[in-house]
Length: 274
Ligand SMILES: C[S@@+](CC[C@H](N)C(=O)[O-])C[C@H]1O[C@@H](n2cnc3c(N)ncnc32)[C@H](O)[C@@H]1O
Image (cartoon, rainbow, N blue to C red; front, top):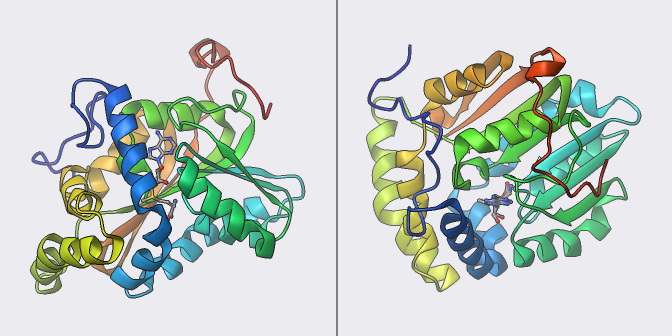
């Protein structure tokens, strides 16, 4: 059932950061924020989630196991940050994994960790709203805790769909809505009151860990996100909750379309990975 209070899948909806007037200002604010937090990002991720985030990313990679095990498969992990999901994908891949992010300091950490994680992963600096991949060129696209930060969710889904082959799979791991009765209020107290203080204390920056609960509250819940994916041309859409809905993994497949309905990609002149 679609929640009307969270029926937030309008085309222009995106991360609550920047001036709110245009996508460029939101994108710039998001990039600056992750640049500030990059040196402590991995530690805080594991610490604040009590290590659960590691299992969630592993489950996301597992959802693509059949694709990853195909020789020559091409999978992009967008908003890859410091690369942890890319590395999970890379461990199973018999093809290529492309980790893409628009924040240079986050990507620099991903690259510095890549040495110990094999040769199947390539990191590149790219905006998820303007991916440097050809139309229908990828077998799967993933995003872990990145999609919520896009300046425009509708355009993000459309761009990920554009680069997927027909039948290609999209997997989005994101914070979501906790539905367990007693755990829910306790978690919300932790997330809203405790986590921002610990995050600010350890990272030395105020903004990012107050933005985190804000952005999750304004993000579409599990059912609304599933509906957005269906509305954007994905089928076999399903989701799985982790830890009562603290995070959810949405998976869907790109439906076959007639060539007339396929976006031309003419707004995407850069094609470094055709
Ligand atoms: C919370 S971090 C998640 C990083 C990583 N995927 C993980 O699982 O830890 C969000 C990342 O999304 C990136 N991001 C946000 N908007 C983006 C955009 N429009 N294009 C590319 N990267 C973006 C940020 O730079 C940041 O590295």
